[in-house]
Length: 481
Image (cartoon, rainbow, N blue to C red; front, side, top):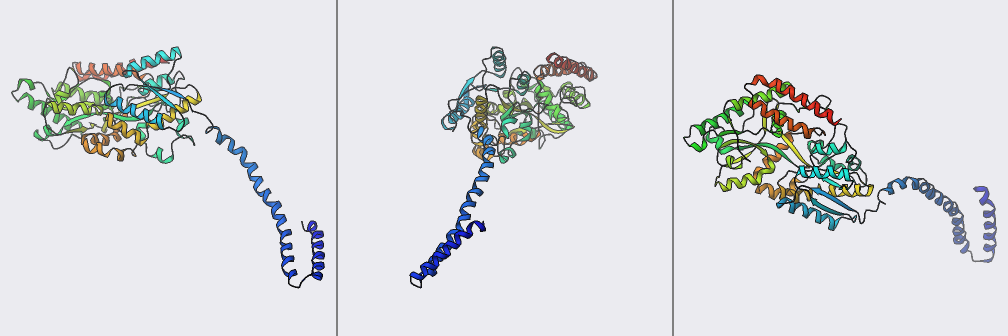
């Protein structure tokens, strides 16, 4: 560089001397300094473009994959959302959420909500849609139904979207999620087939006032305490002299799979084999569960009802009821109808394994259609599970949130519904029923076996009944495979 500048420097120096001979003495002091600075700037002008251009040439190829997803044009994309909340306040809440999304989302996406009746109705409609090819984009379903559809490659994997740098959930948003609710939508191979928009739980309804009158200060924490309180309530009603109370007072027994699994979780088991891809209902914990329930039944500490036992619980015909937290509004109404001011609350199932409830997530799945529709569907699901939308949903449905950031937004609801908050505290003890395609059929077999256990002549029949249940479950799994 110096060699290139040397001739220039000589010429400038000669020019400066000539000027010095012709001009005033003060001028050479200023002008040569100005002229000397210009050559010094020339290499800087040559080097600056090199420093700026080289990184730009290296960065341009790196930006191309980052621009790929943001460039996806979703404007005008319509997604169809099949759900099961077509009446009452739950319908109003869901439609409000959809309307807000349609009016305010930045992508130009439109969601069309379509009520499909109950869960079984929606499953039938979805099975028909798979055959016809006329599929929705988002479906509400139990995880076993989602798993069944995933087995024929119909469902998308939420894992693809959750961690997406542009459209996914931030680290803080992921940390706020309740892990057990998310895990309830995962298959054994790790696929996130369902995303929880809210949750509920199968719990015990417990009449605190009735229990206190019987001499008990709090809900039971062990199987022995549970039996003591249930039998005390049954004895009190039988001794009351009121013929309407005869044969009542303890636990309302309903032989369903949901109820059996609730007790099984409390006794420390989940009904699955070690691999998690099949069933084992003949374990020691399952035998202990069945024996405990059979003993309650044989001891006369249970009762049955012809329909939902809300009136019986509201009139002290039962101390305990196994029911869903989603039934809270109906049970409150039953107490109002009975003009009963008893205090009651949600309580966990208790067993040798501790406390438990049977968790039910309100899960949605994305049907695998086109990249644009899949992404648009995820963006709506993401909005649907945002704290603000979830707060609207809770106020209309009485469900529980799936993330702790929602709770501060529903403080008014908590204050107005203190029983609801006792249920929220129990969600940390939730077990979730198997996310296996076979569970739809197997859970019916579990309910049948539960009823057979209660009706058996003695508890000696329990191991054989549970072994038969295992065999039936294995056959049902094999049929799907």
